[in-house]
Amino acid sequence: MAGHRIFSTSFASIYPHYVAKVERKGHRVDELHRVITWLTGYDEAGLQRVLDDEVDMATFFERAPRMNPHASLITGVICGHRVEEIEDPLMQRIRYLDKLVDEVARGKKMSSILRQPTATAP
Image 1 (cartoon, rainbow, N blue to C red):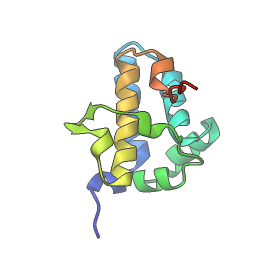
Image 2: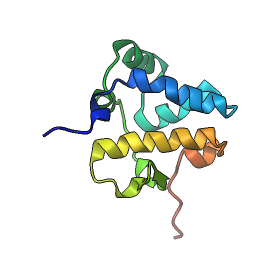
Image 3: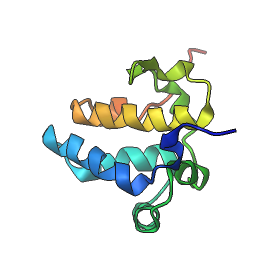
Image 4: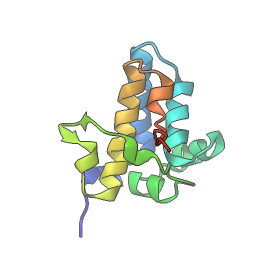
């Protein structure tokens, strides 16, 4: 079964667009790396490795050291779709990352971007 063409697009070819987006809005690459790390578990060396190896998006997420268990708390619209309603798990992960990058670019507080579950009352 063939997937969306973004699945076979290299992360290295998309990454500069993420960088440009956050920098154009006056934010820093380290903020971008922080959300990528939060979502995927890649550290700086691991991120550099996937960029150097030009792995595709499917492999980028397959090899992610640890997808954040709170990623499902990412909600909202990206590319005209509600991320929480995307059925394909890989496409949903890609859109989670897109949503986080958008939030960094918009200047949302990092504490809000890096979702944490709310504590339930006893």
